[in-house]
Length: 590
Image 1 (cartoon, one colour):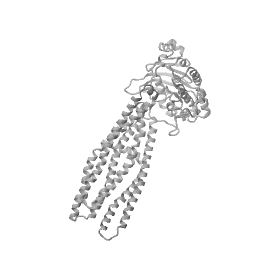
Image 2 (cartoon, helix red, strand yellow):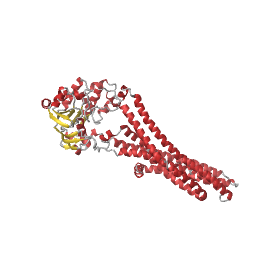
Image 3 (cartoon, one colour):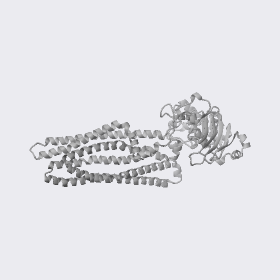
């Protein structure tokens, strides 16, 4: 990113904590001021050594200055470290809130592991650049100027020698700063790759083991780790060059000052006490110069992290309107309008990106509520995409999608989704307890409502045999439940929302015959009061539907009842004759 934009972002993170940073900077400057007084006290000590005056007071003063400076700088360091953690916390809160509002298309284009690394790894790098580097630059700059002024008052000639060496070496050091930023950014990208690779492996852990792919996946993750190490080492190399230059500058300056200063003492231009004090100031100059180099290094590291954070912040998000910021969408209920919802597609066209072909080519159909409507057709016909457009996971490229006669683009997003219960094709179950999964879409549901939905979804027997009932932990992605049990949990979760529109995408594909029959009865019962849309590959589900929409090649081929379509549509007749087995092995189009 351009330096101006980087500073603007850093300023945004820094500004809310400016008071605490200023306090930490004040303590740091006070500690630095006590350090500046030490060479002057040493000069007085050297001058008194040649007289009969007591040096006890000077020694006590030096001791006091050292102790006071150390104590004050320690307090300042604590204030800055605490503030740095607050900066990271605020950045993580903002980024987490934004990432969880990303549009589905953005998430599908981005690796989840990389997004997670932006929240965990990249935000950590902000802690130094927004606090320590600011204070280091400010206090280091002021202390550097004050030290230079004191040295100028003692001997301008020796000051000129010192500055000449510092400028020469400092100019060379500035050349390595961009290399630090470049190496750090590549290291952070490699860390994101590690997260992505691990997320992929753990997301299909059984498949990984069944395929004997442990070594191959481990090698892929290790390669990403090695890449992060390689760029991290490169960044450390250039940072060490920058740090070494500080010591080199001071050592060369010391030798030059010692030689020229000794000649000036011999000529009587300055006293030995002045040379001692000047040399002490020269050593004291290490601290402010180090702080300036540290600030420059931290800025380079931080700018790399800022660039990645800004990239994440620029991803397109949804505006989820709700009664309170952060309240779950399922908390918004449409109780005032409890009638079944109607759905209309008017010449809808859709494609996922401008460079991809259309998935829908003028899809049109009407679904009055209540009742059950089944969507059938070969894989790739665009059935699941219908649900995505209703939920506004995607926006239509042309035409209109209407719910209750109102374009979904005009609905407040939270209100639209609060009217819908949605069971995805793979019926995801989240890590946590069974109760948390059921309440995920309806956190305000009562115990009696939960008990009722458990019976309707045929989950009551499952809960009865679990060791801790509803409070049993179901494992990562519901790994402790069978496929059929996960589908029933997803159906129960959707029913608990009391939707006016229920979307079921192959919701019974993993159920045995007994449970499928029971769930079909539940769905049929729900359809008496609710509009139910079903993507189905089983004839047993399709024949229950009040209407059937046959889709093929991104369009609506025919609509009607089972009997009407068997007689009128050859494709449907072929699907019905084979019990939809040709497509049940596939996956509905997305």
